[in-house]
Length: 406
Image 1 (tube, rainbow, N blue to C red):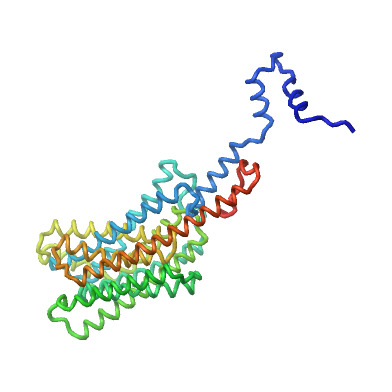
Image 2: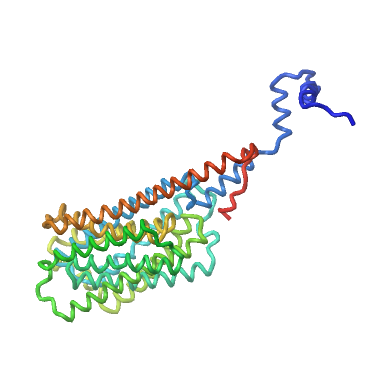
């Protein structure tokens, strides 16, 4: 049976007649393009898959999105802490107002939900694929978040700042334990070392808080504040791995914000009911008109700013859990407790003695060691991915469906 060599086939291909009777290069290219599969459609499918799989480290949008959420968490946590202290320093004292401001800013979340659609950054419509099961989970977690906000407010009202920071840092230990049980988080030297260093830094910080005890604090109120703060730390530690478990079935940051919106609405409903029953709204009006020593305008600016910064903090936390893990979100949140102390030193001229200096160094050391561990792990994954791709055939140029995005 006669065979034809590849060079002969190529020669025959060049001699194919065309309508204009020529075989110029442009006609040849057009003929080849018509003969090949439509690669552009494959590329569009790949882009859609990459858009859906936004928590994949290979997605080009991953690092900008991660950086944005880092900034939101840092700015939101630091600003909310300073504004809350400003509120209490100038004679604001309502625990229900403090609770309500942590969630009532939920309309801000409409921007990251609808803005990508208006800018045609995504083809996905808001709440597309949002199931009833996800709605139920979001409401239940939102109610839990509402109770957490209430416990935090009661703890801050009765305890010194440093003591409250120490007790809230216990959530990091809870997070490590609960994440290992709920999402099977591996306990490694890197994350265990980080948890120990940051926890020790918070303990050292608390040793310097004896002079910060509020005057007239009774034992009853102290134990109430103590119990509420420990409960808040546990609930927040439970919130993080539970959300990571739910986010395992979510590949779109827009849907994360949609779930966060439902949670904040549920938490706001809970806080509003408490405000209405305990006279919180009348307390706000009374504080603004006669109690807050900076005046009515400054009071409402403080409340509004606190509302915005708390939403930035929660957006950053949700984004960190979605893009990384619940443990990473907990580590970042706890690290910021020590950074908030530095904010108090800069803004309110708080004393900065040896205890706070050592605590800050240990906190930064623990956080940097964890970030370095994440960097090494990511670098190793890239090397493995590069080696596996170099051993593949030339057919890798043809786009494939990303199975991880399904």
